[in-house]
Structure formats: C-alpha cells, structure tokens
Amino acid sequence: MSLKSNVIGALILAGCASLYGCAGQHSEAALQQAGADFQKVKEDSNVLRIAPKDVIRAGESLARADRLSTYWGSGSDVVHYAYLSQRYSEIAREHTTQALNEERAAKLELERQRLQLALRESKLLSVQQQGKWLEEQIVALATTQTDRGLVMTLGDVLFDTGEAELKNSANRVVLKIVQFLQLNPKRVVRIEGYTDSTGGKQENLKLSRDRAQAVADVLMDLGIEDKRIQVEGYGDEYPVDANASERGRAQNRRVEIVFSDEKGQLGAAR
Amino acid sequence: MAVLALAGCASDPAPNEQFRLTEQALEQAKAVGATADEVPEMKLAEGKFNRAKGNMADQSFKNARMRAEQAELDARLAEAKVLTQKSEEQVNVLNTRIVRLRKQLGDAQ
Image 1 (cartoon, chains in turn green, red):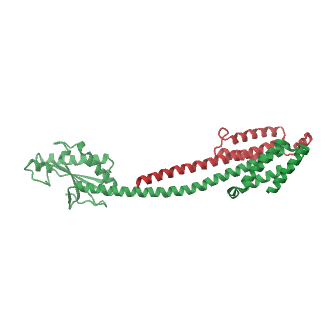
Image 2 (cartoon, chains in turn green, yellow):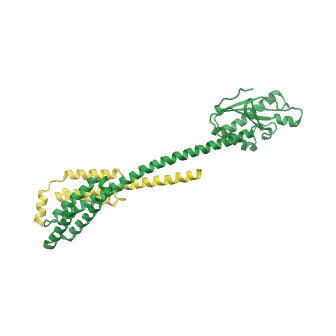
Image 3 (cartoon, one colour):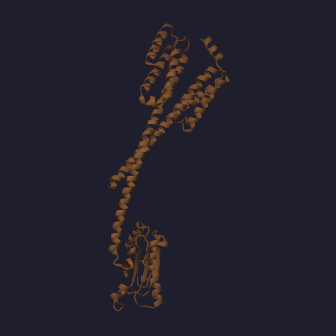
C-alpha cells in the first residue's frame, strides 16, 4: 500500500461520496483515520523491524476498505475493514513497544548483574577489612601469644566468687569473640577454666570446668557451632602467679580462650 | 441496498474458521491475564463475539463473520496491551533495583 494509492483511494472515495453518497461521511472518516494510523506505523522503522506482519495486514485491510469504498452500498464494509486496519496498526505499535521494552530490560538486567557483582565485591572487601580490624582487636585483647597459639584471658571479675555464671560485664568481649569466629569460620577454640588453690581439688576442678562451659554456652547461644568449641577444666593447675597473695590468686582465677590458626589447627591441650 | 445485503447474506458461508480464530485469540488474551474489567478492548472483544454467536444462530453469517473478525483483533490488541504493560513493569522494576544498587555502592565506597 503506497502513499499514492492511498491518495487515489481518498480521491475516489471523495468523488464517490459527492456523486452518489455511497460510502457516506461515517465510512469516509473511518477510512481517513485508518489511513493516518497506517501511515504512522509504516514510517516508524522500529515498527517495520519488529512487527512487519502486522503492518502488512494493516495495509491489506486498508486497501480492501479503500477498494470497497468505490462500490455503492458498501458503507458498513468500508467501516469494518478500516476498523480491522486500525486494529492491526495498533497491535503493531503495541508489539513494537513491548519488544523495545524487552530489549531495554535485557540491557538493564546486564547492568543490574554488573552492579550486583560490584556491590558483592565491595561488601566482601569491607568484611575482610572488618575481619582484619577485629583480628587486631582480639590480638590486642589477648595478652599472651604463647606457644599455645593466640590466647585470650577472661579475668575473674567476669564471675562472682564460687559461681560459674558469666556476668553481664562479659558481654562485650564475648560478642567480639563471636564476631571474630563468624568472620573466621575455620577457626576453632578451646576454652580452659582455672581456679586459685583455695578450696578442694575436686571442687576447683568442677568450678573451673563449669566456668569454661558457661563461656562455651554463651558462644553457642550466639550461634557458634558446638563442634568448634572444646571445653577443659584444669582446677588450680598451671597458675600464672603465686597463690600466696590475694592479687596472685585473682590472677589465677581465670578462663582462657585458646584460638586455633586460620586453618583450624589448635595447639594440643595441656 | 437491501437486495445487496440479502445477496451478501445468502452468499456468505458459516464463518466456522473465523470463530475458531476468535476463540483462540480470546483464550490467548485471557492466558496473559487480560480481563474485561481491566482492559477495555477485552470487553469489546467479548461483547462482539457474543453478538457474533447470536448472528450465527440467526444464520446471519456475514454479520457473524464481521463481528467475530473484529472481536479477534480486539482480543489480540488486549493481549498485546497486557504484554506491553508487563514489559514496562519489568523495566521499571529493573530501574528501581539499579537505583538501589547504585545507592548502596555509593554508600559502600
């Protein structure tokens, strides 16, 4: 359907309408509208690329309406085929918009994936930096870097005398340990309890074990798997200071947390 | 004109094939979620096809065919509009996500 035939059709229609009134004003308007719609889709290179079949059908229907408009008494047929032509033009436009949206969405999806990857990398980097920072904190908290590995000592102020329950003042350091273990999923710990020499051997052994277990329980409650935690009680053995003075005894009442290396290798128990 | 119309009726066969096409187009439009309540073209399609069925029953085959043809294209347009809308929504969702990602990346750096 060329522009030329379109014009000729319109001329014929106009002539026909004025001479016989065959197509009528209604059908003439429908034909013109369909022609205008078809013209628009036909000139749109995207529509031609994406929905050529619909454009062809719009043209065919329009040509038919055009042809019928030259016959007497065909008004309703003209309107019908003009209607079909308009519909095909509209469908062509919709299909085109849809396809263009899909092309756009495909590009956006690639962009989204690229950004997601970048975000993951940046988050990972920040976690690594955070892990490094925490590690420095833990190392700073741990007073002894002995042949047993990295050892952190929780002093006896974290427990009431004779009690195995961990006081709230221990929360801060416990949370740091949990975070550290979460950021270093291969590391494991051994929690060792110690007492001073006051009291009976058996009681001290039990108290030291209970206190170490209390720390282990809190770690587990906060999400560290139990298989990453060993618990030992040594009673009054391995004192770090003389039991003669109160100060020395206070030093000896403690819980020590021995960290493995990054690969999970833990020094042997005493 | 009456004579021509009558002649037209007489020469038109029952538009069974067109009815099949229209039904198919309506089904497809429904399958993508086009409803008469939400898509005006779907309402048109259903209304016209119902009238086409009435014409068929009255043996008014030409009217039946024309209405069924229009109903078919109304349904196809309804389907296309729903799909276009869905593709627009998809683009919007992706744009929103990208904005969010960019913001997070900006915050992270």
